[in-house]
Structure formats: C-alpha cells, structure tokens
Image (cartoon, helix red, strand yellow):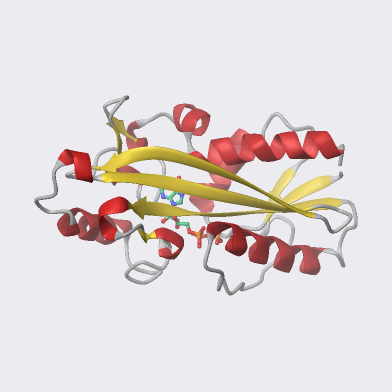
Length: 203
Ligand code: ITT
C-alpha cells in the first residue's frame, strides 16, 4: 500500500482519523489533499451501506491517479433510543446540512424534555469501509454508549459531542481531550479494527 485516501469532507472527522492513524507508516490523505472533489449521494439505509457507497465512489475516482491506494470511508451518527434511534444515518442531514449544531443539539435536548436519566440512553456508531487495491471491500464497526445531556457542555470534538454525556467519566465527549476521545470512541474502535484488517491482509 502506498497511501490511504479517506473519503470524507468532514473536517472534524478527518482530524480524528489522522490522529488515530498517525502510527501507520503510509500517509493518510483527505479527499481534498488527494486532489479529489466529488459529491456522493448517501442513499443507503445503514451506516455500513453508506460507508461502502462513499469508499467505492472515491476508489473509482482515485483509480485514474494511483493504483496502490486503499480508500477508506467513515459513516457515523448518533442513535437516541427514546427517539427510535433518530437521527441515525441522517445525523448530518438532521434539520438540514447547513443548520448549526447549536440548533440541532438544542432540538434533541428539547425533544427529550422531561425524559428521566435512565431513558436518555444513546450511542455513537461508526462504520468504516475499505476498498483494497485489489477491489476487495471490508467493513468494521465501532460503538460508544452514553446519554443525552441536559445542556451543551465542552468545546472539543464536533457535531453532537457537547450533548453526548459519558456517565462513567462524568463528562461529555466534547469535554474530553482529543486523545481521550479517540481511545474510547466509536471512530477509534472502528479504525483500530480496520488497522488490524489492513495488517492481516498485508496491503
Ligand atoms: P462525510 O460523509 O463527508 O464523511 P458527513 O458529516 O456527511 O461527512 P456522515 O454522513 O457520516 O458524515 O454523518 C456523520 C454525522 O454524525 C456528523 O456530521 C455528526 O453530526 C455526527 N457524528 C458522527 N461522529 C461524531 C462524533 O464523533 N462526534 C459528534 N458527532 C458525530
């Protein structure tokens, strides 16, 4: 493998991905860094389906520039049990892509108004898909369990982190240092599993 291209346009994700994969000997490039710009329609109904759609679309575009690359993609989101696992695969699109997370987060807090602690369970899910240089497709999944808080807390991370509360740590994921979050997060777990897959296949 010469390099990894990560099929994401989300800067918050990309920052975490680079931190988690910094121990690899090959460069990990964003789509932009690889000179790839494309719009991808995420019309799958599961995180895995969407991750595979993104990885395949970018692998097809990247083929013309380079042969020995692995393309990875991340599809992730927040499942709130009380809301029948909403926003789920629609996490980025919830209330519109351009709506600020201050507003999206407040909306979820409001929808859980009066809901007691024990019913505020939620999880972040992350599916990582890889398209290997030989065209093989592999997926891994990581999950982190938590609860929806009563207010936004913390300024680290991105997206729904300020309302995702970890009872064991008495902090939201936006109050964790980047390394602390990466060690336990859905994305950290899914990417560690993917690193094992890459090692196993010696790509
Ligand atoms: P790409 O498809 O370009 O990768 P995206 O933001 O559209 O970027 P997704 O469709 O996978 O990505 O949506 C993921 C959304 O889930 C993301 O925009 C956040 O709102 C939320 N999310 C995922 N992981 C998160 C995390 O670690 N912390 C906070 N929010 C997260």
